[in-house]
Image: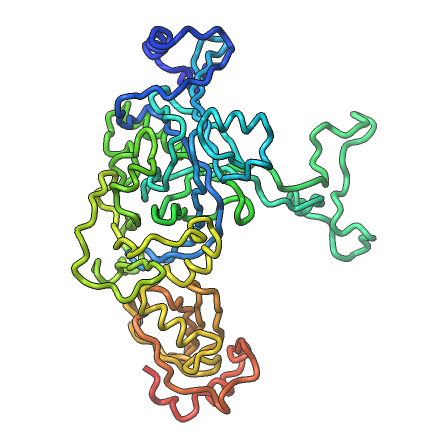
Length: 316
Length: 178
């Protein structure tokens, strides 16, 4: 079965040749960490994938937009989010994997292991609590040591947020799998919330692997997709997203540009619908990343207006 | 239209927004984005580190007028606070533009504070849940205080099923419903 998205994972053949010729040759399936290669200022293209950021979920509140509609928002704060490595690896099928390693939330030196101390010393950043990788296209590498800012996201764009969901502990079938349980009365004895039967009879004579049962629930990596960026505040490094985000308050979350909408944008670009490549109101994205230096040249607090007809105006 | 709904986000030591702000820096990534006024001072380090951030945002994500309204009318210890059971008139930006009713419930959640007003208009019970911070809410005025200063309940949802108690609350002001 032809899966077009697997083909799209591989960068263009010309890019591979460029990479092979430009830097030192990489042996198959070995990774190297490239140093601070100064690159010319690049511009965002619909085929580029930017890096994401790591932030802390601070809580939820409400904002009222310019039309007067109330939006529930999650407040995310960047805590000294910096680049610690640029990764370029060649897969076995000769395709290239590019990634930016991002770290956030400073940590005391004495609580960092020697191995990680060395890693952070090489990147010339403070020791951090969380280190994560974001896969990118080859043009979106960011110099090591760059500090990100909330200006990286543009109000009006959509993002995916990845975080560990709230742990619910050991939970039964009704909560975990939305089982209906049993009747409240009419003779049901001591099993109102139980799962009931778990299989057939002598054939197969066992329970199928993967049977939905009671077990630990929550505390897993969850991606919430397509959350709109409502407001960006660079003075406090805050990103306001419309909607809820998995995890508890003060948890580390990964934010990156919405994958699915970016794919739709790429298709629109290929079709020639240039107005629909980026969401309404968004003209460009900071590329390769929104840094602290860029934030100093731009306004501090930016908000997205409602890109729709006011819901308070009565219609026929 | 834009001026009415424009928010002025505040910093800690800020007073009323003065006119004649410096020209805001251009934002090349979105032509239609709303650029809010810059904070006067850079926020203190604990806020940047996240300490006390949410209580700070609860207070400061609104205009000074709304902050005063929240503090005076919905603060727990304010002298002019609204009690459940009082009759309150509000003016709104959208229909019905003016609404008067009995306060059934006050939900205090910082900037998400809201109250439920109930009135009977043309033999139809009408309730409105109004968020104090909404830009559509222009003014809130206490028309009549509850009898004997305060009711014995925080939430008066029982009034939905007893019109006689409702009219007893309205009392002499019944004829002046907007």
